[in-house]
Image (tube, rainbow over all chains, first blue to last red; front, side):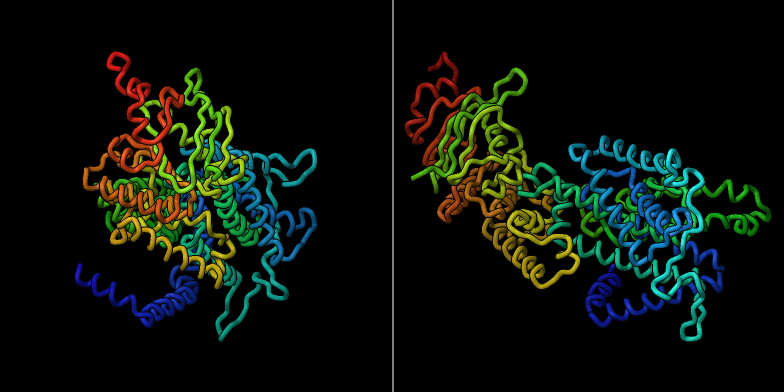
Length: 361
Length: 255
């Protein structure tokens, strides 16, 4: 096994091998909705699309928690800001129908501004205290959305905003079935492809940031804020930048979510959402981008897959002993606990962190 | 010649305790200036006030001809004061090379857009950061450990890495807080040669140190703090013979 790994290490450095792997991966991702749609049904394509949304969210939170080490429990607020930004400006609610090419970046930008705004009062706080304050912010945003239907109806309160415009770029509407190379791509598939492109963009930006002057400054603050300041890092601005960058990704996913669902309400942005996104980051491997992507996919797919325990029970025991709906969250919770006990640095930590963990034992 | 750093009337209180009491110091360009005193005399507090970690209650810092008005740590680092810490404060989970690269932050410019676009200017800057960091690791003698995590380095190498990281900020004044603490005689000797080399390469050094032999051999000038007050200042020989200093260290009965 060790020999095989060593041989792979040499082999994968060959650029031809790397490009072939990328090409195969690209082909697989492009074909995935057709494969999954034909075998498991379109419900699973929808799950894949939402996994892509969560990849963007998790990578955004990873900048704040994984890189800069700022424990943020209210991250879903930025998802909400992005979603409502799109929903209010592209729906019959205000009878505004601004174009998507404007609204998606706008939602990201507004969420980024909110990130800096919510980050500013927390600059002196660290660890547990920061977590408590950000948790409060997350709830404040949700409660505002819930109550801003009076005296002037802005958010339409708990009923939410419906009939949100689907994404449309010029004459290209994602809500219509398109035909390409003889293959029909229904709306769901169009969204999948757009989300895939944007998720790849977010991964690319994350990788570039990680390996940069700014990325190093974030990690330095995570490691020792005092020493970082003494080395000339403006800790205030760099922390605000982390909050803003993270929130920008959240806002982008929020806009996509609103157009994809066609409906948003405050219920979608509860504390449990923040916790799930944090779980994706921690479970995958804090600060390690491939790990976080893996964590996001796993935590979207696993709860859905656990709906199918009925078939397994039938096969093994001959009848359904426990209703799968009851079993689902129990198994999910058990899986989380088991993973964190067995792999406390995450399922796929960065090679350096893994080494340090081995050294620590 | 005007001093590189002159401190006048700096005071700092913590509740009822006076940690620094109207301290005046002047450090000449190119000097190695020693700051000694019994434990709790206020030496590290002076460092923390100088580098912006604490706000002074009174006093003025004039550095390189200009008054330090903005006393936030990163502004002071930008002015050219770099420091190490008594209890080593490296970025533990970054490699030795990355630690030094962080030190270049204050002298480089690339922002978010540059990082994402990775345009020619950013690539050139990044390459320069890496080259400079590698040079500095070589300069302090730990180039072979560039890719090891800071926390896995031996103690003496961690001290050297802290010096390399501080030098990466291109300081005019390097403030070292007990760099020889916990070192054996051979390591201390190597440290002494390193500090002499740093001085001869043009960086002024302010040194807190308990190793009397090292201080006496290395420093051009020494100031002694006791209970937050400067009780003596002068050349090493004079300070060593000063009865006030002897009393502070050994107690009144023996003086």
